Image 1 (cartoon, rainbow, N blue to C red):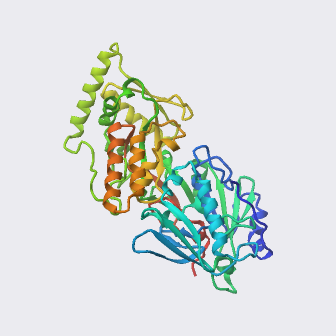
Image 2 (image 1 turned 120 degrees about the horizontal axis):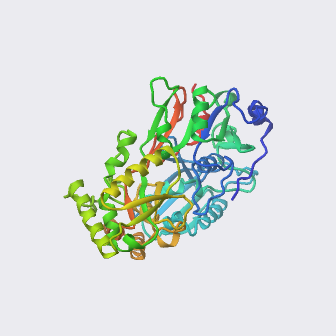
Image 3 (image 1 turned 90 degrees about the horizontal axis):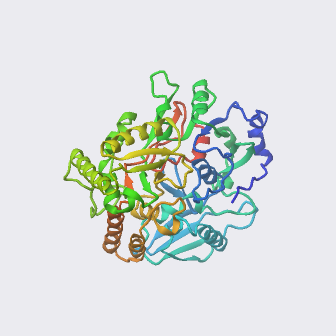
Amino acid sequence: MALALPCLPALLMALTLPLLSACGGPAEGALDIAFVDGSAAIGSDEPPTDLRLTSAASHMRAATETGLVTLNAAGEVVPALADRWIVTEDGLSFIFRLRDGQWPDGSDLTAESVRRRLRSAMRRLDGSALGLDLAPVAEVRAMAGRVIEIRLAAPMPYLLHLLAQPELVLVHDGGGTGDMLLEQQGRAAVLVMRPPAARGLPEQADWTEHVRPLLLRPLTIRQALAEFDEGSVDLVLGAGLAEWPLANTGPLSRGTVRLDPVLGLFGLHVRRAEGLLATETGREALALAIDRAALIAPLGIGGWTPTTRMVAPDLPGDPGLVGERWAGASIEQRQAAAALRVARWSAANGGQPPRLTLALARAPGLDRLFDTLARQLAAAGIRLERVSPDDRAADLMVMDRIARFAAPEWFLHQFDCRVQRTGGMCVSAADELVAQAQTALDSDTRNRRLAEAEQVLAAANIYIPFGHPIRWAQVRSTITGFTPNAWAFHPLPPLAQISR
């Protein structure tokens, strides 16, 4: 759904006049932010075909709309329309007390009005992985006055973090509910802070002196870094592995490269079960042949940890039921085993080496990744060829996706057969195990079912993990309000605050 662009009150219009006369260029007093994760206009939050918002769209929506809770600069859940909450001892009920206030059109912020909008937001997620994450929600109840209750069929330890996602903001026809107002300027956007009372804060006479407008622009990474070096762009967001070789990490840089310690999925997803990839054994040969640490070594990214697990290792509360695969074998032993399997497959298929295609865009970091990956697979007798990222007939695609919360359900739901829109393979037996975990009333049963689901998917070898995704930002040293976090999500309102 596209953002409704509210009319700016006269008080806020004064903040944006320098920007509105700047014809989309740098403006005095504004923080100029470049997003490099897409070519769409910054103000558009229309989801792509896989229902995932771009990084820019997520940041925009979270700034102009809000839900019961939201995320702060450190990626922690903090109050929004709800100013406090309690969780019952059995974990089956979350009770929220709404803040005093009104909707943007002046109507009262009541439990019933919030309930309707929350249910609407949940329905919009039907058919998506986040919709599957919400499956244990049994009922949303409006209680007395400003109290709302979310009842669960089974405990959801991650519910608060899920409610803080931009997809679960509470949209109101009378205007945005977030801390900021938006004015579109072509493909760019200007954002200004709403008055304190509209943000649920006490009135403050001089509040305009302590905030600044934000100018958001979609740029290529080369454009963004060039303008950063020139001094017009202050912050570059949305960059990842593809752009990493262009990051300015030298001593003469006018800013600092900040790596986000993100959780998520980064690896190969099998699209077609044909040829070598037709069997679990053949797909495992591909997984065995890859030296994960060596994939990233040429890029010189410190602190990156490889993994063979589909679910990120060492999540909070991880019971340790699943470990790294092939832990007792060295990389040389694994690669030798892969080469032997490939040789046997080739002998049984006319003596020709297997040929695999990988859908991958052209970018400096992806070029290096492909070159290293192709060399490793060639050593095992596999010929890897690169095709367009839009080629639906490709055997493999790179999955590079940031987690929304730190629980196995998020990782496992990315492979659910009901939400596969990019042609990746899935395993319905694993989906059933995850569904059973979501109905379990005790944590031991839940953990066992989730571990079994991960093991089923791992044995099927439909996804070949590399390690955590890579996300980074170029940040001018004078910037405040920016904190690296596990979600690579950097809320815009803190960036608009001027330190006193």
